[in-house]
Length: 409
Image 1 (cartoon, rainbow, N blue to C red):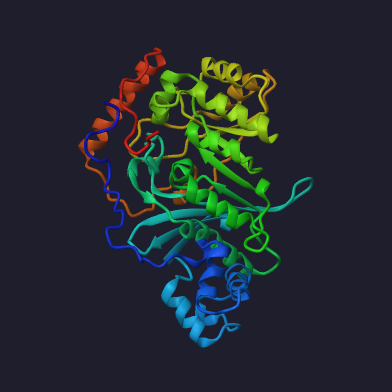
Image 2 (image 1 turned 90 degrees about the vertical axis):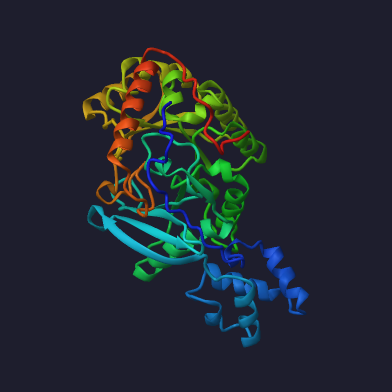
């Protein structure tokens, strides 16, 4: 068995009752207009609220002074201005990276990461926000701190977009025209296991009268939920699809991405290939590079063969330090060698530089910082089992472990 019988850490997911009022940023404009109409108010009141929510500096309904006092009171009774109860922030990389810990109404915690990429010759300035779609994650990738937490719950639509509203407000407060240019669904959780709410969040972020971010500036990542990929293809959105691949061989991917036991790598890539053909958008494939694990010449050749001729781009990300695992990042020269072998197959490759490692804000490190420390015996047992599973995978033996609970169909 790869994962221990007992939870590796106490996830500390909230046990309080959630505030039943929906967050106003997650309410569809037509539903908000209907709420006003039911009260005999003109439909333009909904526009006033949405403008204040997405464009203004208001911090509560009371600040929306274009509305009569009685309406402000009624709105506050029916909706929440924000679903984030409190936030704490920590910076890294000389202020270029900021991790936010968001406390939600039921005591759940999620994280987002804001990254600044200054402009220069031949490149534009970017402010990228990495956001969460779930509290915890059901997929359970063993090199990912979020996977160690297990699954808490899906986030509501407003709980997703309020991460964006908060970051946008902080940037606006800095002045100088700083604003979000890109949003990536690569934080805590598997976005395609909360697809309805993720799609609602994307609609809000993309709508000109709401956040107004171009679809191509939004990236949705998945570890390989094939029905979700197929559904996205049918909808035909123009945002970027990213696949957390991590291994091109099934035996190894069974260990690194347990979802692979339900949807094998060839099936995942076939769905992504169809998505690229239908949308004309290049698919991004992410690989966390693990020393002595998935960074061999055989792995590079398997990846090249898997993606040859596809509209694809590969991102190689040296594994970031994550407690309780037996693995470490691939050496830089090994990553360069891997990239060169894949490039020779005509597949573009980028080697990513880690951001926010020292504050637990880098890829695979988000863990909401509220989790307790596991017992040493549990950590030792987990490492031993991962080492044994890795050894079997490198011999080509498929895992006989079940699909992680919560993944479903």
